[in-house]
Image 1: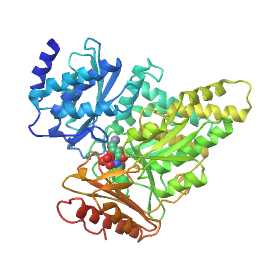
Image 2 (image 1 turned 60 degrees about the horizontal axis):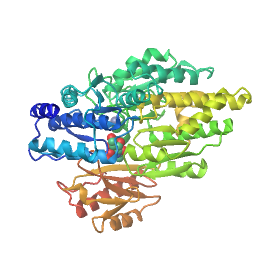
Image 3 (image 1 turned 90 degrees about the horizontal axis):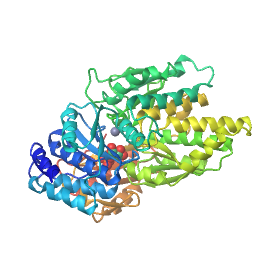
Image 4 (image 1 turned 180 degrees about the vertical axis):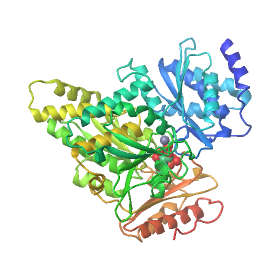
Length: 543
Ligand code: NG1
Ligand code: ZN
């Protein structure tokens, strides 16, 4: 067929380096940008056939999120704005790794297996972040999509692309499928939510933001006028000087547990950091003694679920709410949610798609990774009940007020994926409504000191895990070693898992003091190094 000849011709312009094998990981393909040209072209092809299969618009986002500037990556976005399904992740890996001369056969295999009607129209939305490699790599995606109806959105945040795919496939019910539509929807909801919060001072309306020198900074600048000064953002690391994610951004702040460079932080001031593609956010402040306080995804999940639970009670709505976390959630947050808030907590494997999936089982599912990626999902039934109550003329003022707040809360949330901009607006609105300072929010519970480390091993796949990645099944003896180390410390917990986005094994430890958490993380790193084929120098103690 003519289209296959065309593919053959174009694929020769995007050849695969011989011997290179890449996996569709936690968040698509991600590695050094130099190795990705053929992957981009092939993901353009795959997105096109996925679009034909689903008879819907599919998204392709070119970004490596919080990774350094020299990396890049790509992931597919399914029709409702969610991550692509597991079996298509496998197709992606197959197609990506096919030798140059076998590419057409690999593609035809997928077409056959999925019984795809190739005469079906296709529509693909392509977005990219601000990395210098993103321009040519997104062009490679478009070459793959070629003559088949691709729409290039250019520079957008990852969540904006997810939002637009969802809008397009719901015929505008979720909003207008443009960046402008995105600003209008979320900013209007924010203004509605905060309009009755009397006496907000300029200080309370002020937020210091670290844009990680990425796309989020550009987009916040574009959005600002829609906020009508109800939120006044001082934007730092806006990409005009510094390097993307370099000593700044949500991942740096969370993992290093310190403020980003390039930002002047006044004591007590409310600050937040986005990551490189603006799908993660963390909050923080420094106190009068200069001590740094981090409010991560767990603190956000707690604030949001408390707020929603209170509103549901005031509205008299009997809806099932749950918080979904991963093994990285701080033990204190889980304890607080279960024992004080009496909220159902579920733990899943790392990776947004797992959290998203479990959150869909509840009327209201609040999900957050500790690193600040998260959102809230409302079931269709929950949305309808809230809507009905908001329109009901026979309910008392308290219930009505709660229903209206719930309705606007739904509208300020990007339910397709965790979104730094939408999460920021939600948190800002909740703090305004509750008249709460960041310090008061911080004292809801106290984090257990913790440490995250990385260990390089020869092949990270030797580590196999179970129980939402909290226990290692292989290599033999590793879990036993971890268990014995954990026993030496108070309130301790530790686990290891192979990363899905980097060629490393991640180690997490928490304990009653920072010294203990650091020592435990180090000892567990050593156990990984010795039992799972460590390479390079042996891990050194942190102190
Ligand atoms: P990996 O590299 O699989 O740990 C990291 C994050 C995930 C998720 C993905 C996608 C941690 C510990 N892991 O995955 O939570 O955000 O990146 O970007 O933060
Ligand atoms: Zn990201």
